[in-house]
Length: 255
Image (tube, rainbow, N blue to C red):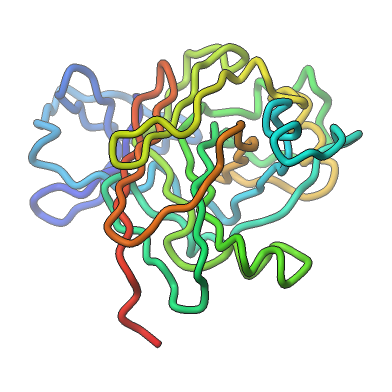
């Protein structure tokens, strides 16, 4: 797994994590890089979001079980919206519960990390555009989403897109178990085989609308079981083969 981290000297680096040890990466993970022999202990590092996206592209209503849950017809094409890059935080970072909302919900999702500048590609070309996969939580102020009639405000508060813990490259995204627990209680449990639109189709589809840049993230929709969370709750998203994304929620101190 490729991680991005801050070391004890406040340097921001990339590394390759295996068995609790991190080998420092030399070079740009989006072009050419080498894994050095410099080894660090993961417990001495602060994990950062694994990428700094220019945008987070989100796919709504993309699980068969979730569509049934909200009693909506399956979409004929992907439903797309955006989250600004200021929503992005790392695993173990705090999600801030804004005072403007009374109903915040979690949404466990598989994230696609784009590896190169991408525009107007075919499905067959999509694999070459993907650097790897990560975990995301599309935190949403559901009352604002519904009251506004569109999704920007409810999806865009700072800290509303935890991503991490890192990027896994050699994995088949078409059959991955995905779960979310709140305070240890299972809330979501599904598998990416239930995606309505597959990974290659999504990347191709989005690339025909907007240019994707290295480090951009596409989050692929959430399965059945979305629900509310409250200040002091802890959310843990797990995806088989990638790991876990853990975040607590605290009430905003800003009016």
